[in-house]
Image (cartoon, rainbow, N blue to C red; front, side, top):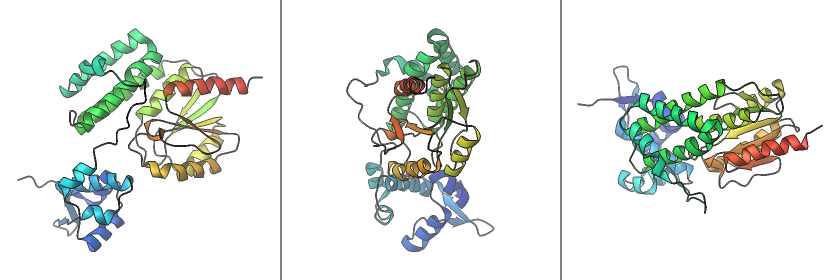
Length: 303
């Protein structure tokens, strides 16, 4: 019998629901219903953890937890597709015919074959076209395939990690930037997706910008301190579609206030497609717009 279970700390990491929330729901709603191990510690069955993941996704969309917890799991699944998919804008539809081979390699769990195929595409097309014409649309295709049940979670993770490896290797071969502008790249807490940041870093580094990568999930105050310490001209953040959109305005306004006034704040990624930026925040819906903004920055600061 499968007795796999999760500790409360593991459930917190996996779902994004705090330990205090989990205990409060247990008292108030009677769910989740953890078992106890030999030491009396809570152990959550896999089925309950999966239900908690769905509930958290729906909460991020604005649903109330009390109503969700009382809803049968089958009905929850109908309310919450794995990932909210935005309809593509006219002219931006992605033709997936060129990515069938790469997706098949992921399904076959052929990591070496997948990396080799990416490296061949990189060698043929160069880094700029590789990022814009292969990695960016393939990332969308992988997300859609996962949402539709054509890829498993671990297969999506395999794609992400292998693609990050290829991008990092390519970035490492580029000459150091000229120092103008200095671009600090990171993400805010609860945004753990790194691939978007690497794509931006690759394109900006190709244009000669000095990129300062800090990885993901940096506290806002630390982003501000890093911008000052590195004398950054621009702080660039990436938001995936999985990031709760309702948190964006408050987080970005807080960061804008914390940053020095002469440091620009740029945000991009699929998570900001419907976000209307306030004053002092520049928002990009495509990688190409980020490159164009870099040229505009240089023009404004020339001389």
